[in-house]
Length: 96
Image 1: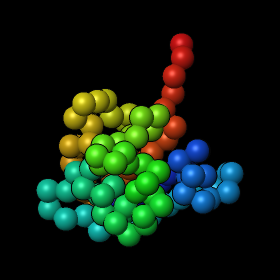
Image 2: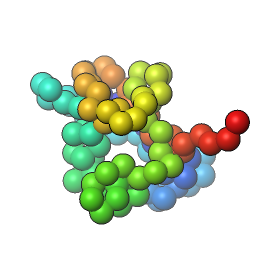
Image 3: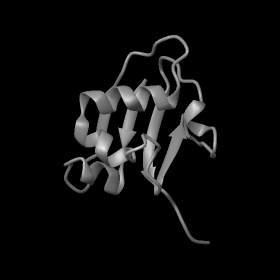
Image 4: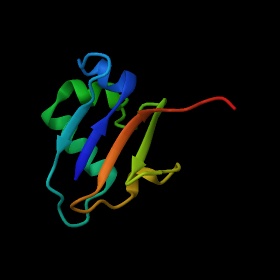
């Protein structure tokens, strides 16, 4: 699975503007978006502080995209991931 992080989320993790964070992770059976994000957070504490609240819920203002499809709440973090999938974290889009 590939994780790509964009915008202010990547910048808050220490990446310069225009540079995105990209991480490759092996996928275990039964892996979910949430489990994979937690695994990355354990390896990169800065990522964890930026992406998760203290209660380990996802920060507001972050949209999750799995294989090009924006995942809706409330169960988006429970979506299954497999080898070859791409998860993207983007600044949430507001407005109309």
